[in-house]
Length: 451
Image 1 (tube, rainbow, N blue to C red):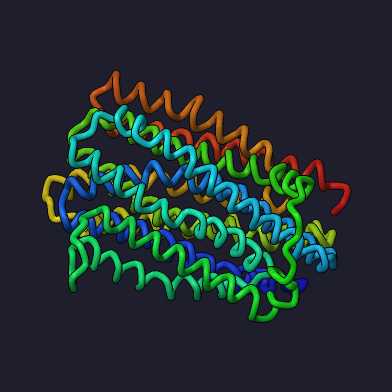
Image 2 (cartoon, one colour):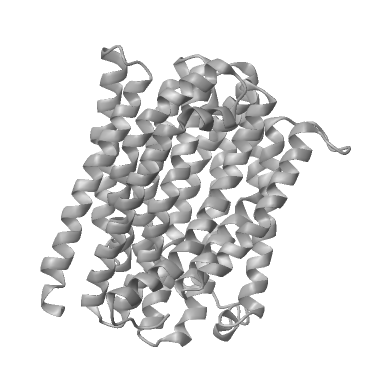
């Protein structure tokens, strides 16, 4: 990355970093999308099972992998402050941490998976598919976390196109294995929705191996000599990463786990309602890739500017990013409203599921404005290494306020399952307001004398 001097230069650089991140995020999301969609074409029970398995896995994965996001501002600030020799050491420690986190998930999952699924009182077929899907997916957890650490390093250097290329190459492989293993084509076993778990695990191994080769062989990454020396584990470095990463991971976990909590609460409804809810949530997650990608791009550029002590430039990037996210949210909301029924039909052939999904998608529209504000601000604050308030705000807005609001609407009004979506929308809106206040404090008070 290079220093920018005008607003137009900043916009160009932000887009240069952003577009590959967006394509990468959509590609990673598309793996889950195709898992759900192709399972839906197989049967309603399979799509319900895969959707529930995915909803349980997503908050765990995003929360713990969020810890590894700490490497992005760390590397960005090291590069911005010309401390390049420390980069390899920090990256290797992040890789060690990634493997450790993956092993922790596997150990806990061994004991916790069945009790969680049993508590949901699912139909037998849905229970079996969800369980076996997660077991299959677990084969790829270690390489997935290693890839996330390496991607944080790659992206921190502003080389986001590399992550994009890796993901785009992996996506068709994921779809092909889905086709072979879900439907049992060309001599492969017909596993239904469970096959999509194995397909995704295979893909995770491939992207990890490619990322390692890129970091070792291709410039500018090879100049940092990552994997050339295997340092001893440094508890001090782990502590430095965890101080930043744990609040980031917890904030992401509180945000994503609220959706899983709603899925658990909705398990009392019939399979059609569960499938419709999960399909609508799956597509809402696709739309979230835009503000999330802007958030990740802002972390990189702002971390670089803060490392170089260019605080005025960091503030200008902030407002460019937020404005961009708000504009895109209006466009995406309009598209979703106009095409909600075709979107629903892409996931399922079941008419009842399709029509109920289209109703849920109307509520998903209201996610967009709040996401367009809170996600970029989270990325901005990470660039400043200000993460603790974001964590607290996520806990309060989603769990202390949002979930109870949803429960009240669902239980004590005639809204039923839609009431939980009202709670989710309320939590997102409250979180966005709190984060906006925190950003104002950081820029107007904490860094005011430095600008």
